[in-house]
Structures are given as C-alpha cells and as structure tokens.
Length: 181
Image 1 (cartoon, rainbow, N blue to C red):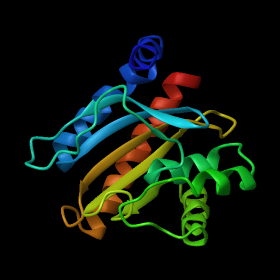
Image 2: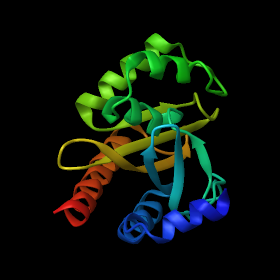
Image 3: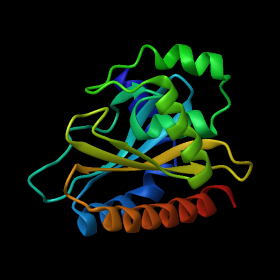
C-alpha cells in the first residue's frame, strides 16, 4: 500500500507546489504543516509534510493514509466532495475520535466549512490538538487536496488562528492557480 501511495505522490505535481508553502507555514507559525490528497472519496493520503522546530510535532509520515472524513480535512471532504449525505453519514459512524463528536454537530461544522473555506478540529480527533485545514479546489469547486496545520490547543490564540487561516487560504489559491490555470 505504501508503495502505491509513494508512486501516486511521485506522479502528482501538488507535493512539489505545496512544499514551499508548508515550510513557510511551519517555520512562521510553529505548526506541523501537511499537504493531503483527497482525490479518493474513501481515504486521504499525506503527500507532503513540514515539521516545525517546536518541541511538539504531530507524528505523521508522507504516505500515511486516513479515512477521508476524519478531522478538519474530513469536514472539507464532506463540504466540497460529491458524496450523497446518506453515504457520508454511514462512513462518519465508523470514524474513531479521541473525543467523539455527534453527527449533527459535525454536520454543522461541514456547513461552516463550505461557507468559509476552512475547517477547525479542536480537541476531537486528537485530544489536546487543534487541526486547521483549507481546501484546494478545481475551478469547478471540487476538492482535490487540503493544506493542514496542526498545533497544541493553546499554541495559537483565536486571532493568530484567524491569521493562519488567511495565510493558508492564500497559499491554497496560489496552488490552485498553478495547478489548474
């Protein structure tokens, strides 16, 4: 499986385009920055990574595979993907969280993600960790990738988190321009 993931990574331009952005984000904000491929509706694959020099670093490797609806990226997959709600609800029920969230509450966060083009997972997927994700969309609005930043819950205050989101969204738009235009 890892060989297949690495093969897909090597033929994909996204990791090359996102890596400089991930490096800037991790250095500036002290976060673990991750590039994720979400082209498979069942799973997401880590395709690029930049770890900060901070004592906390989320352990994840390029090639790691997770259920597509998990955490902040999962909310974006639900918001910008093309899966029917019944299928999403069925797949959601199989997810494992450190602090489980009710489907109704999670779905409200999906609606928020669709409207605001970012998602936050605070303390649910991994206890004590905040995960922020922004989508990389095709010109028609379909999600293909996400840019993700993870930090300890109290590492960034609300104002800093908002600034991080704005910077991540700018990077996502820049990458979209390079990939699709």
